[in-house]
Image 1: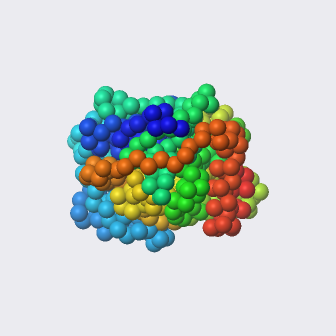
Image 2: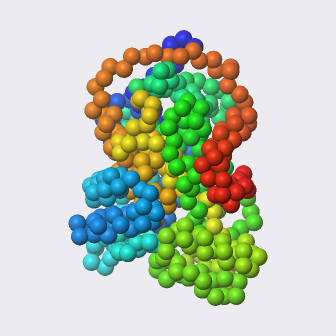
Image 3: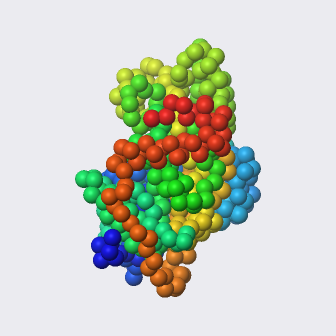
Length: 429
């Protein structure tokens, strides 16, 4: 392709969730920013985050919050990443409030903090049970008004453009199968996790780990690809599609898990992986594929599945939920490829370790996407355009490409942890 056939921009962001949107808003207004997304703007997992977003309430909670995060992550976390996330939390929350995000308050007008599994203190802010939607919708509304930010929907990244380990842009494909290329000084990956590769997942089905597959193809360093969180409580269903997540906060407010005999069998406020394993053991004991949860809300979703929660216990089952591993980054979102950044669930800076503490995901996305944006803003280097040969006709059809990408990712997971693969990945989509 001739250079005149490329779209040119300063920064291209792949993904329109919290991480991608906040990065766009934190970049200078004199930079041209192009945000592409695989489906519609609102079809991102950030919209689905029910529980809330953590924040350091006061300095006296730092050690407790730090330890809760480390313990949940089996002490495999990067302590520096954890420190940065916690110390940055109050500033990020203040920014969200200034932008117009509404968090629930108590009768005195103060923030109403709640607690979830593995937290020893109430430090989680929420907006009803739609915190992710409130934050994402607010950021999107503001971003749409920025003249320097352009959105392109129904467009999928299918390759990195790189030469000598320097990222020059991406190749993408639209909903009609038309391919094109975008040259950018910097590329930010914010494509989420890999839920679309699993039979049971709380993620949207189109979130299939494209960034991870391309990282494997181009030799970009990955980290902990087998560290995949299984959420213990999703609404049991025999229908196909995304599983409805029953938030950890309902257990924080007193909901309990029951086995087939109606017996309580675990402490519901333990870390997610511990609760998940307890549920799996109980299902194996009784030869079932679900257990039960007593809860006072989430009425409509349960009624749609035919469960009257005013009379019945609600059946729940574990499902793939969150990717702790991903494209390896430092605390500023930098990957092992120059001018390529990763943020949100796509990135792995080690903040979560082996298991994510509840409600740290939105905070992590916000903190580290802002740091990536600030680093890009400081880069005054005049980056030369040095493009490899690109033949758009050489790319395989969508179905072939998706199969190839999935195999790359699953082989990587299996190579890291065959036991986990056999337990959770042998029924992938």
